[in-house]
Length: 244
Ligand SMILES: [Fe+2]
Image (spheres, protein in one colour):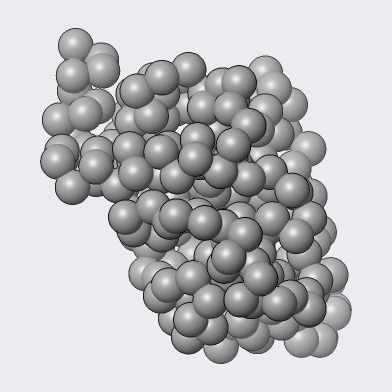
């Protein structure tokens, strides 16, 4: 999404009662859901997704190309993930995660994106998505956001969130590989920065909701449920109870 002009007070008023927390991190078991493994083996043929830029630069040098990395490189690399078929190991794993783990967290039937957005953000390349509120585009008041990196990201390699609705105090959220960031992205401002780190970010994002939901109250209830899960359970326990 591009930069937006928004009346923040109007947006906050429109959001109404907020969930108890606008964002939360949940852990999952990467040995059971090895997203990075499949991307490393089947897509990029590299041992470390966080160092993807180094392999790209080496590839360019090998072919006599000498230039800085740029936004086009982000899009080209992203496309390699985006074209994976539903039958690929990666997407089988993705759907398995949603149906076994996310449904368990949500505690009810849910709707989620069949085709998540895949992202690559190389070092020394501009923001992939400046600060915005999804509601401006999606108009979906019942959805919450799901953001899963395939390598650990922090600082300007990760997503920046407001601390509270309308606060406009964007800060980076460190997300480890093995964690999912779930946040109220319809109304909570979020975006990325120029990546000044030495880490490439590879990630997916999508939105989900209760099946059949249509109201903001549904979205708030969903976010509160996720916050409760994060506070009450160690994720390993959640996953173990799911698979046992
Ligand atoms: Fe967004």
